[in-house]
Length: 583
Image (cartoon, rainbow, N blue to C red; front, top):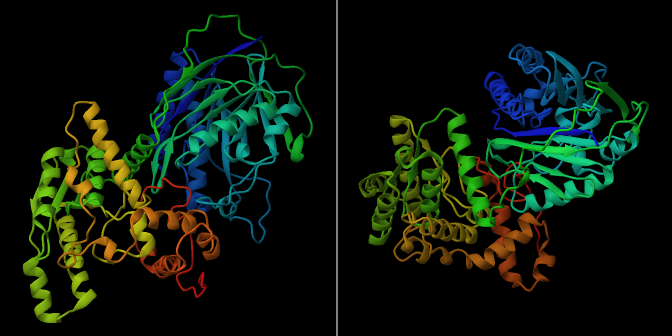
């Protein structure tokens, strides 16, 4: 059987940064070629970054993407890498689609190309367009209508893009019809917990359906709320894993494949009306060679480490890609701000993390000492700014009472953080968790102040779980656990009044998070939730809080997505909405 050494490059692209994305593609192509690769692949839209959102509708950006692709092909050849075919994702446009109502302006394409000998020898577009969760691809793209197949050293290689595997039909059965020996799919599939298991089973199933070896090349890094976890996979025609890349690591997977020899060039129309587009790059098989690359399967991360890694990657990408050097956090000594601080130190280095304790008249001694202890353990920059005089000054003018008086403390803290941010140039991090956001248990322009919410998609029970995991991981490495034990063990409190606890306003977080999971993640209605054994009055109260807090969530900053349904891009409800899951 013919042999082929495939290189799947997991790289971190930045949306719109065509120059640096091109540099990364050149650098990793060189690495792959030096490793003896015969075919090199990069992720979906690696050249432009993903998702480009409404940039896809801007003709100037589409033109720039096309020009960058052609320049990349020439440069690879000029630098001695032109003989090796390179598959790369980019933004293109359809040349044959006629403008019509309901079609994206300019007929953009989520496209891939094959670069060879200084030329773009083949262009193709994603056939299946996702339109769920964080995806709006019917808004942005036209579907591709071909099955691209390239012949490389006597092997026919079919090509696909991401959703082409996730939906039935299309390029997977068409690959079998065309008789290809290898299917390469380039992907930019966002991370969420447990998706790696779903992805592996998907790749195995599609390989069996296609009747050939399947290579799933993935992106890593972060873009706004989204994180990409890598996890590139190669399986044989029976679905057995031949190689699997590490999670959350940039790098190149090299794997030697024994593949069936290509027959007569496939022609005509395959499944779903896809026209087979076949290009012969090198018809003769390689001389037999001994495999020198290990392949193999990288060790998988446990769930807690996986989620924590996603939070670190997401924060680092947001801060660095937006040109900031440092972050600022209000440290209360509580579990949420402590976890955010630990994530920030791991993402950016403690020297780039600034914490501020802002005690008020109601702040307990342990909240102040726990914040200081966190700073000592992590080494972050720490200061104390008492806010009681500022609160008193507001009160003398406004005379607020009740909830308005309680929220004043949070708003003074928010103003203090933004003042320091403006003065010193730090990016403010909002410490709210998903449970609090769901119920509206936050103060607009107070604890909701910030440019990014690292744990916005993390339920409160998982905040505790991740904090314990991070401390245990430090213990195992012989390091100082970053989060004070008292921050984990004490009852949660916003300290808005003497003796106040979260449980004064909310049920126990274990019960609350179970109900929120049903309502927010699973879209279950009131009766379905009650049927699971929850108290009807409690369900009514929680659902009312969630529905009433939509206007608050709409004003909360973006934050890393780690769940099936994050607030914002995944879960989009109208603010003005009189539908209630009532009795």
